[in-house]
Image 1 (cartoon, rainbow, N blue to C red):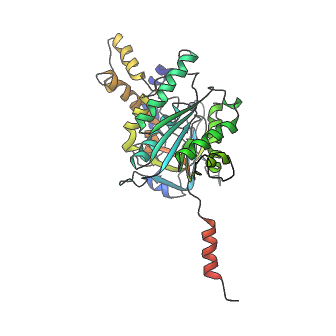
Image 2: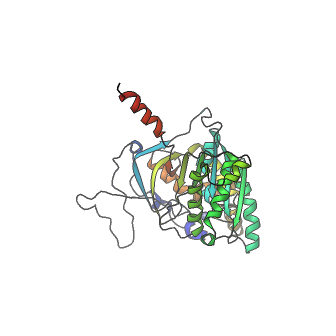
Image 3: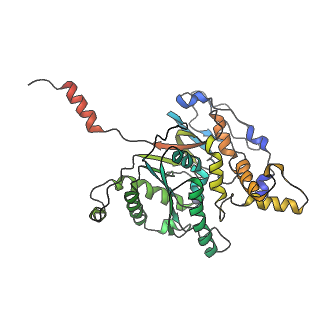
Length: 363
Ligand SMILES: [Zn+2]
């Protein structure tokens, strides 16, 4: 990653593009997608009768790991705002990530929000992150520490790691990863899953797709009575995972979004989760390194503040969180994260019973 490259880009480019009105969150009627500017390519109005099917995301250019190129919004798009009074007390979520920086970057605000609203949260990392360190061994050790510290910073009760080899997870037995997740979901009695969209288009990292698919299938099978019956002989109960939040990752991707989460009040917690991730990714101690680099040149950047702790925090907040601020701006929010949300299925037998009760006649 070349930090200097994105530091030199102008923030002014981020301000381009039309804003979605806040009311759009409740409506199917959206303005035309903002055209992406490129040298020698002029934006054009869409041809007659053509309707935009994807919206180009605004990018600050400050982070290599950010919102994808395009979102498509569903016509039942909703904004999930902070709710007081611990409405989720007693519920449990599992935040499953391939690597130690996935959840803090893409869903750290949601994790902090749900915990503040009463959820008990668990962070589960599938890989060993060996490819992100000074050496392979260093990467394993540092990212093991980071996964624990990220969980603490975001407010999770415990962090787990499965240690599959980094960038090689498409060579793993997916069924084994799934079985381990089913075991944990049953032990922890998980109600809600937060993970990478298993259908990320244009995803270059094989680990993300493997982790997403294994977690998705584990949700359904965790509630099944005949899969892994030895768990039940050992005293475990089925887990009913009724809610899922899938986040995008692929920078060049195109994802379906039906839930915008207002993470404004949780942005500093999200920042802390990313600062805790020191072994990999664009956050960690990048701010203090930049501060030291500038000091050698007899310079300072005022937004970084007067010490290393402040520099690390403000660097992440001002640069790496900028694209989530731009996303929030489209919906009239300070900061936002976007998800494909899947809610509880209605009880079909109750629906049939209601119909029967209303329509049955005497023989
Ligand atoms: Zn990752």
